[in-house]
Image (cartoon, rainbow, N blue to C red):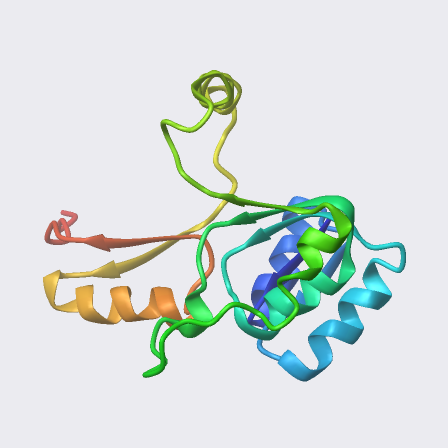
Length: 165
């Protein structure tokens, strides 16, 4: 498995904690395509796409015939003043028989969703909690979702801290 993350700490966590074979820096758009080609010299079968931009374009280039892109988001373009644009090589999907599938849960293929829920119910979460304290922290917590701050599940803790006697 290959995964990308925008910080060295996240890439280390992916390798050490989840056993990801190769981790790529998605904040390096110029070097990403080369790193992906090196990590997957024969191409990729699946791209779970949440970033967009140069990363999405590189993934399309490496997609093998009949490969699939699960489109979850295009976060790299969320703050652009221009409207979102498809990667210039999007037509390659049609040329190789690739599929672009929207990530919609639940409702899309309910039998798969039910199976997923059953399989996940028995697993312990492995992602660390990134806890920020107090209601005043919510803007920073929210903006951090779009800038890659923290590792794991971001939580804003609203309860006052307990005093220990």
